[in-house]
Image (cartoon, rainbow, N blue to C red):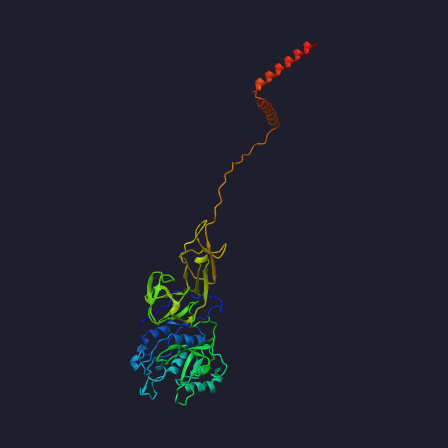
Length: 450
């Protein structure tokens, strides 16, 4: 049995209900599935996704988990793998039992199954039977219930000619333009979204398989819409046709094999492959790459260009803001992410880590974090160092006594006299003798004059 893995070890966070969906639960079939179906990727997909509690979101999630299932030609084809089957044998009819549709299959599981598929999805999503009128496998009978009795259960019917904009989870009724019967409708599907004058759907038994379709709102093939009074829950919106700006959540891989890489980008080392048509839980998104757990328990990054979103998780954005080397990742609430290694250098040295501001935690490369809020982190480098300066240590002097002060003053006076003598080119003793000689000469001269 092929099994797609869900990333384990995810702890639920107690965060405001306004930002988180209600507690999710894995889908368990509401009936005893056939042995052939139980051993298939489609059964594994059904059990992999988690119900959010929002009826419309959950019905679509169940339906998308079955993308690619193909009808078969006998009970041996209930696995959905007979891509050339054309006799309406499907697992979805097993829920309602064997019937004779008058098309040559007798009483069997081989009968038109578009309504059975839609009702099967409602039941697996745990939508109450009364809200949709019961276990219809007839499009025409189901449309009549919406028109005649639906209001008693909060349901509404809108004719295709009305100015009604279909909503996510609506049931959409069609009538073949070449029909020769008298029924008002002969096909049914589920509305994914309505945008720019187009309505997008998922349908069973269109092209003999489960697939995605789109129509102009004024397409004459559309008969009308049945609006169900689904239980509502505060869950993130899902862009079922997103080509970029993906968010974490459950995705189903496109056909073929997709390579998984050790890091976001096709230049990184290859670490494995994902199975086409399998459902995966994407717990982190970086650019157009999502982080998933592979079948062998290892993990890697895959390009989401060929993946279809099923449900979207509440999430937080972590941004490492470093100019051209900035990195932004979206992390599912309760999930972890590893700070990548970036080579950054400033005038003061190599990158030390990342922080949200002064005094906040420093995050380093290789560190595993579980964000509980959006994080905008800036690079942190070593602080610049200032040049060292040396100063002579100051010495304390003892206070002087009066005698010491007088002696010091006298000494300083003598030093001044000596300095003056030295400034005239004489040392102290020669200067004193010269002065004496001059006085004697002057005295003699004065006596002679008299």
